Amino acid sequence: MLAKKTMRWGVSGVFVAALIGYGAWLVWSDAPAYQFLVRLYVDKRFLKHTLREWGILAPLIFVSLQALQVIIAPIPGDVTGILGGYLFGQWVGIVYSTIGLTLGSVAAFAVGRWVGAHFVQRLVSPEVWRKLGFIVEAEGVIVCFVVFLLPGVPKDMACYLFGLSPMPFWVFTVVSTVGRFPSTWVLSAQGAHTASGDYIEVILITAVFVAVALPLYYYRNRLVDWLRRKQVRSTDMNPRTR
Image (cartoon, rainbow, N blue to C red; front, side, top):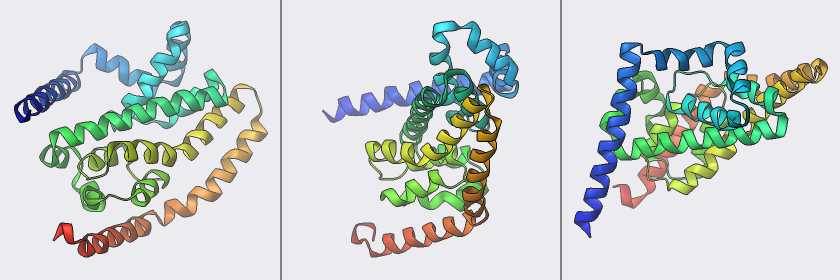
């Protein structure tokens, strides 16, 4: 039984390492496939034209792009979130974006859990590790929810870090999805109202979002520090960690 489990983990590790290596090679060699992917994210008109050309496969492509922008963290996700509402409508856009973001988050979480701290610590920047390294000890839903709710926190890198934590897989999946939902809804609504020409609604939604998000963004570092202290106290009080 133990041998089968070890073999399964070994095969999974080799597969993940091969995917990571292939992705790194595409980036390093500036391959046409990588150039095409980057253009999809940086050229909004090209992305919209490409999705419309794919017809009935457009939702699948869009969901894949949303997942990739989590796994490949430097890729910006705001453009795709807005475009989802623009192309598919507010509520369908939310569904597609949520599916893609959840798949990407779960994939990053799984990679972090499979490859371990040595790889993840090399993947994230020293600053991110210093600020969010406490995540690796997190078990509760509050830490996860706040991290994914706060604007300005590197959520994509946080997925890899949560993979190192003792947090159950299903808890991370549910809480990270719920935490991302407010910003996903705003982006999709902005795109949908822009497509219909309801610019007043776009301005109102943006104004309300900024009014709520700006204080959270301004105090994000203090909130993260509070989470870190709370996690340290929880760890010190837990006899299993001593």
